[in-house]
Image 1 (cartoon, rainbow, N blue to C red):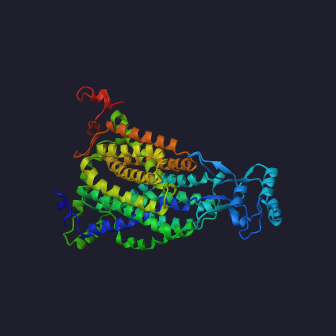
Image 2 (cartoon, rainbow, N blue to C red; image 1 turned 60 degrees about the vertical axis):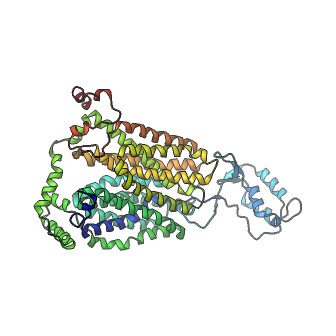
Image 3 (cartoon, rainbow, N blue to C red; image 1 turned 60 degrees about the horizontal axis):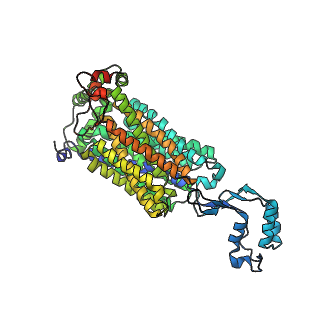
Amino acid sequence: MTFKDLFNGKYFGYYEKRLCFLLFLSTIPNIFPPLQVLVNSYTPPHRCDVNIPTDKSSFQSSDGETLASKHWKEVVFNLTIPFEKQSSDGTYKRSACKQYNISTESMRKWISGNGTTSDLLDLRTNESGTIPCSKYLYEGEEVSVITEFDLVCDKSRLKPLFTSLFMVGMLAGGPIGGFLSDKFGRRVAFLAFTLWQFVVAFVTSFATSPAFYGVMQFLAGISALVNYASAVMIGSEFVHPDLRSFTYYVLGSGFAIGYILLAPVMYLIRDWRWFMRFSAFIGIPYISYYWLIDETPVWLASKGKDEQLIMVLDKIAKINKQERKSIEEVKDKLISEESTLKTSRHPFLDVAKSFTLVWRLIIMGFSWFVVSLAYYVLALNNNNLSGNRFLNVFYAGLAELASVLTFYLLVESRGRRSSYMIIMGCCGLGIAVNPLVARLSASLVVVITMFNKFAAGVAFAIIYSYVGEMFPTATRQTMLGVCSCCARVGGIISPYIIHEGENGDILAPSIAMAVVILLSVVLYLFLPETKNKRLPQTTGDASEMKGLVHFACCKSKNTQNAKCAEI
């Protein structure tokens, strides 16, 4: 069967095309929850607010000139706010968190007495030392959670905590969503968590404290993964098996388009509360999905809901103008696909007994952790790149779209293992050289970062499909769930790496990330290539798949494979 044959009316009719378009539209807003941090946690340049009046023009400098004629405001800032050496480049900048210990009362007396700069220097010397800022002055017009609640300096640790709470929510949402999807149906899980996403966004906009906001971040994380995963499940269960990769491409493209659209939304809405309300209001058109999205025939057949199944099959046949499939045909297909699930009462224990499969799971779990870590560090760090931060988000969206196209057009034809090793090898090297390039050209750093973002996006698509091709049918979904948990751990750690970079230390995090990425590339030598290979049905089938490098005990298939397979 050719690719062209798959897209004819028999296998991909109007109903399936309409469904893919609806799912494509549903994934566009999915980018807003994970990347809301670019708006909500934006930290503009800031310093202590020393309450200097802007209309004062009669201050006298030591040489008799008015401070107004010498940009007196900057002069007073220099006299009241200390300079600090930056660990990143060795330059000196005005402190963002400290001021000289000059009381407000002393400052007021100095102003009212038309004091000179020499007087202020004497005053600073007498009161001596530095103290933390009591109030902050932020540059620009943006209003974020950080600026509204003054979560800077000694409170800056809350910034990565918010993102980590979101990732913990994603970790909790995975099993919850999987259970609800299996128990109540793909459609119910998709609609419920899509509604959850928009309602949580609206409630978040009314947060009155950092604690309130942190709780809402956790709740937002719960829905962030489930509605997208449910959309993937709906698409894959409706279309022909050979078109499932196309379904992944469609959903990934919607996510990337949302990424691109995020940039102009950020530019137009500079207040985080209204950004969250916008993120909620765009959910209004999706109310129609209650009538447009149907439950999958596969799930209805598996639950014995024959009456509803007939209604869905009739609807598909009517829209496609084809003869309706019989219930028996759908159930026979379901039984055929799930027959291998009954070959073992404890399939997960069978995998645990195989050294080859346990080692394979460790490698895959580690690669999911690494790719997620790299992806979120690069995606959530756009605000810290040089240049226009809105254009940087737009470029990152283009990189996301390019990664989806690359996976579908190139990686699918070249195989998973070699593609992962090449693309993540380049990503690791790119991250390693970034601190060195930063000393030469800030623009080049942006280019390299966008390539790394592109590489991480391709790698995410690779590992998502790769893990299911190396494990037996009975444990495929479980292995995917285990690897997904590893990815969430990478996401939880990522904001703290960004936080270290914001504090001036970019060399150590960059080298550490490069090392773990390149380690995962080397470990992929132990994994089998799955291109044009039959999916393993049993533990034995999966164990027989060999990588470029394997342990000595696995070399002899006839005499030693049994010893290698059993711990």
